[in-house]
Image 1 (cartoon, helix red, strand yellow):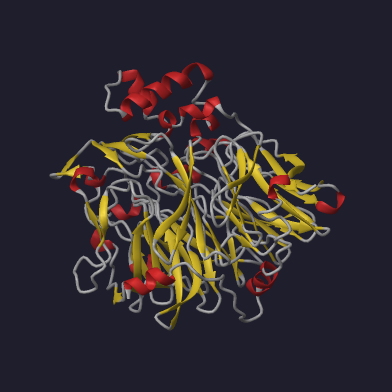
Image 2: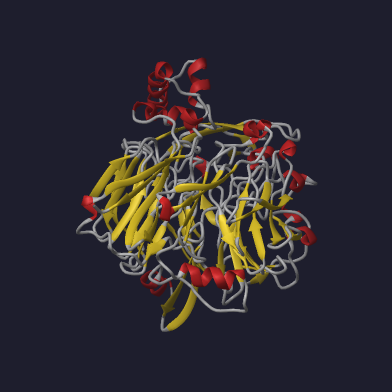
Length: 626
């Protein structure tokens, strides 16, 4: 069975099905028009694939900048624009401006919206003031604001239609995620795992903004929306399965945040997403498996009730959030049609499950330097079925005590963070932006105070021993379960990928390059340096018969937090980089250097060299053939 799955894994096309008339029916139909880009990931299956082929492997080297647009904000720009007919909708990080640009009038600004938010929300945002994008349906644009409000704007005028309070920044709840519209509801998660938030996924009525349901990641069954039919690896989870894995009332400040991407299967009528790290980062302070943090959820979008769950990293010791995208494919396996879900997790393992049942089919490392685990127990008769085997050397809790563990791969950034992969049905390959980074991790005791950081660990990050690159862009072959080709990058690849029918794959680099590579070989075909580092997601659309490629540049995010938050300067960047290099080589640091090295939750020292290549920015750059 395993060999058959490896032979078939990931080789499929996006899911699309019809259902009752609804906003999601409209969106599903609209997503089939490659001229537009109507959802954050292009389609409900999160493939980030376009059928446009005017730009292809033979002519992509002739790309030129067609036009640019300044957002007026200098922080990390994640996500990408929506394109619906002649209109393009562009978003920014805090203060979360939204622009409506008329493509038929040379990008004229038809309206602009800037919410009034308390700037006190900024220090409560863990890893930059990013926002991952907008959603569209029912003539509305939906925005998840930094202050954890979900708002609906009239797509024609920009007027506020309704506003819903999703969480309280005073308690550490913030908004960074892209909403997803499913039928008559808008679904949105929340951030705040570093502040001890009990995190959740919430559905709101698309017309009124009224809350329909809220499902927490941990707590009693009536809060996490489990019933006697909810399963994990094919077995009933049992009553109050979450409470049994937390000490006392720790679940109330347990994290498990839901700030990543969502996917939807219209045929199965299930929505899929992942939950993040448990709070605190110090594992000794929260004994147990800490369910259901680090978990893939499959829920009914009408009721929120969970059909199945799978916890990838029980009792997380390394901040390996499980929020990365779920990519949905249909596949023939052993002559049987199966509906698959593929997820490249921060913990360095690529998972495939049957998305109808939650059966675990494959768990493979997608970076050979991953060392915290020897792999996942795939024996269905084993009591540890589905659990990763932890290598004691890299545990941050040893003999019941906090332990300063060194050389853990991957770092807390993960082998891949939220930056989404793409899948091409033409090559039957996944294209995965990755971090090639390891860390030292020292937990310490921390007390909880509402609205204050609840981390309890210091980190430092650096490339794996013997390597100088901190990133790879890889093509993953499901037929062999191996990497087909790798493009090394000096820094982590923090942008989302785009695959096209033109046999071209696009991605961006932290230095600011938009790159186009051959989908089959990985050969670089084109690159252009945009005004700032790219952590946005590459998108494509067609207007007046011409194909365009668009990407937001604006360095930031966790990897770029040193620049985005002003923690790096030309004077200290070189010193910080030298300190990080000595730490990676096992050298001793002075006390002031240790503070520098671990700033930004460990990222500042490791990425200090970025200041030599790019600076803050906020620009949409659009490319086309001459």
